[in-house]
Length: 329
Image 1 (cartoon, rainbow, N blue to C red):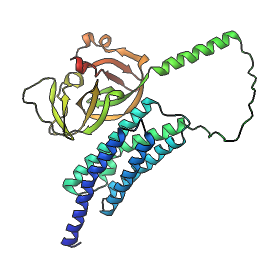
Image 2 (tube, one colour):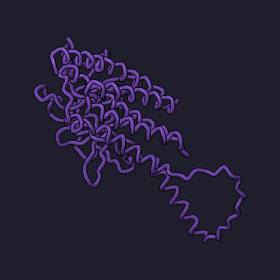
Image 3 (cartoon, helix red, strand yellow):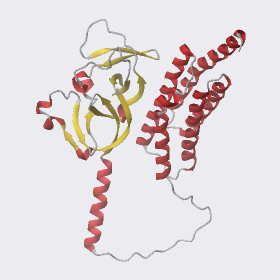
Image 4 (cartoon, rainbow, N blue to C red):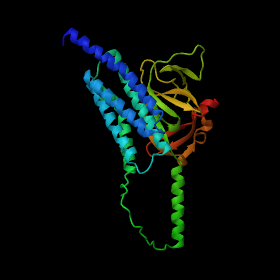
């Protein structure tokens, strides 16, 4: 390729990268109406991803285009769930979907920022940034399975009278009790974002999670405050980053040298803030019935900070964060 041709292509790549910012803004706007008008919101997502995929392919960013194409495919599957669903999604399902879509947006946004400075589109994109899409695809498949109800025929069906044999009174009582226990137990199941800091695992209530962004340098406050590490310029918002070192470890967040990890953007009672973690793994269900009080397991709760409960599973011990305590502190 000649110098003039290379410069010509670079101009188109610049326009593509610049247009990516507009695409991400459109996706974030569509997220705001996901629960109220899911079909309209997903339609907007599909339109944006289709246009983005074509632009990326046209300027030679084929690896990124491949991932956007996969995102479009998953969105099409999710849209099909809304089109054919016999059972509407619960509010908690929307919370998880919102979170995962936000995570995908930030994943692509971060890569576009790298493209802006390097113009290098490599297979590392597939290797390092596919987790967000893997989680979204797994959720879509799981929701599709749970909603696999045969379509109702439009033909008029004659009512059927089914005679149910009389059961023994004691057996009926046991069945009712078992059903009530199972129902109450399921009501205590909540969703948490599983995070890791060093050797510790933490569960963050998904209701408090707004999004996850890659770790980046923080701006310091004029006055030294032990409760804050600094603030992050998040798309024009000065987001305070809390110092959870007493809870996570004896170190203050991620090191400046490594520049690895993530910032969890959270919201409690309308107040937004962030905190650093080494790794944000996946959304998991936990049963509050199995929680144990942290202060009973650690004398005086020393070193547990915002940890109010501990979940003991077969695989790991998960410390449950009580983010409401950040406002009370």
